[in-house]
Image (cartoon, rainbow, N blue to C red; front, side, top):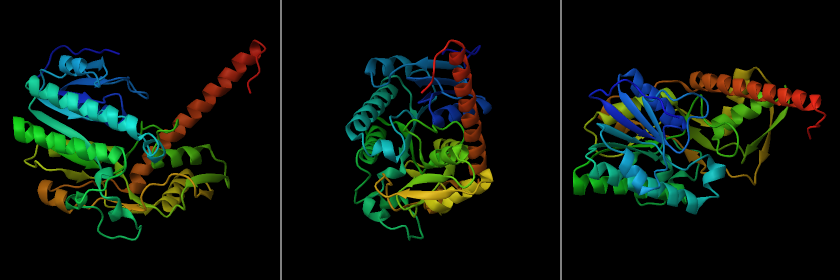
Length: 347
């Protein structure tokens, strides 16, 4: 997909991963601020047409592609990654690590070679030590200083921590302007909601949207795992503020509002107006017991933290997922009708 604007401005940004959830939202965010935006990804956005001035289909695991396309911009936002929910990243370590390290190394080197000095890197709360997250009963959340001694999430977490250090090395050795955010469970409309890569908010929204009243939905683990979730609009605002700040060390971007998975399911069911029952799949992947963002440092550094209450953001998220489920049902019925006309049965 390629969509060109008339001319570039003095504020030109490249967004890698612009076909993904966060990248596509952030592209829209920058456009609203008057940027000329070049989006790069291996795929176009799944749920909407990119509003990038130029959308380039390219694989940034290829250094030639990175060098060809990452140039002539004021700001580079590195969102591109092979990632998904806990059910995905817990079982595909080598592929995730290889893909993401290649993408990040290529983008940083292309930025250095082509004079792109301002770089943002999207890291993750998965960098934090597992021993800090063994209990759901904690009060203060994860603060930036907790990252060492290191024991991050296997695979994805180690890759993110390595890439953070690679970014900081490029800042020290080559003078790149580097900004790093550790995302805590970003959610909202247009996130993956089916297929195996979805995260818990979208997965639970999908299950409840598909359920009838008093239906049973499956939750991985005992449901007592505690998380905090950050709405996509807050995420975009936080990234932009961080990029244009004097903060040259990693910061959390996440909500400090904590909730258990069981309570999240009940909240979404209430939004949907449905009574549901929960079946706990104790052998399912469930991640750490407790993870939330400590926002002390970002409040002190940027004078900011997320503001969208979980129930407000989750309502928007649920309503969007519900529309997708209704659309999927309509397509299914249409396909069944068409096949019946030609004498084909659907199993």
